[in-house]
Amino acid sequence: MQGVRIAATDLACRRGDRVLFRGLALELAGGEALQVAGANGIGKSSLIRILAGLMRPFAGSVERAGTIGLIDERPALDPHMPLGRALRFWQRLDGAVDNQLARLGLAGLSDVPVRYLSTGQRKRAALARLIGQQAAVWLLDEPLNGLDAHAVALVEALVAEHCRAGGIAVVASHQPFALAAMRRLDLAEFAA
Amino acid sequence: MIGRMGTLLARDLARLAFGGRRGGAMLPILFFLAVAMLYPFAVGPDAPLLARTGGGVIWVAALLAAILPLDRLIEPDIELGLFDQWALRGISEEWIVAVRVLAHWLSFGPPLMLAALPAAALLGLEGAALRTVELGLLAGTPGLAALGVTVAALTAGLRGGTALSGLLVIPMAVPLLIFGAGSLSTGGQGGIALTGAVSLVLLAIAPFAGGAAVRAARD
Image: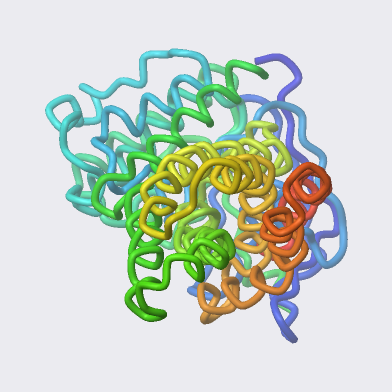
């Protein structure tokens, strides 16, 4: 993962009539991780979507070098399809890569329709999709929601491995995220 | 790119044509046949009248049947976050909408043309009239599919979007209906050619209008 980078300058975000944050700048190079912290409704998800290029910032700009992988509250898996088929759809688009189902504790769930999975299982399925994508920049919006202690440790380990391999991770979470050398960005400092 | 489009088309067809619990392609076809079956009950067993008006009834029934699947064409994929994930992978909304038009047509155009055979029998359409109806449907259903996907994209995320999209499709489908059903009274060729022309225009617009609508729904 050479030349991986994500940088934002002077970002502002507006939802409806309210400006959520302004004057936000960040820069991450390969191997770095950042936790975006802040109370509910402060704009963590909006920042993630702006960084992903899915939402236009009210002001400022974002530069990206490297493919973007995103996890948010929607797993992007067909609810009526069995998990194995739903994941295979993404594997076909991304090029077949082992998405570590066994490690994520999903190996026995291939035949179960996605809508029957629990919140935590769905989150882990979304992680499997992300791993299969082999994106350089991971943007994770509340990746720990609905996960038990074991799975939380697993996500932290996955993010650590991703950064060690030269990737970037931006984690928006109100929960503590244990990762050595992770920088922290408190959105409250930029609240307008 | 071609491989990715094939993957998308396979998924779209699995959902739209064989979409299991939500009826897939079956429900609109049964609806279409039900209308064709009810019409003789309503107007009475007057064979010449049925034969004269039957082609028009088939066209109206086809138009209404095409409205049924609108709510599952675009909106579920936006809600599930699939369009966002595709965008991150560099697959443009235009491509996805184009593939979706093809899948939607495959899941309701050819089955509708097949169902038109028993419908024509119920209405007493024969020979040349039946051929004109079938050729007209072949020329017109791609336009209906393009229109349906475009309107589904435009109304995705709106409250009451399903009812609204039905109401939006109907006036915009009037040219297809006029030329398609009109080809029956004029005996074919010209009307079918015009139906095909309208279809081509709608097919050309759909990916761009639909793609822009999906992007606009994101903010």
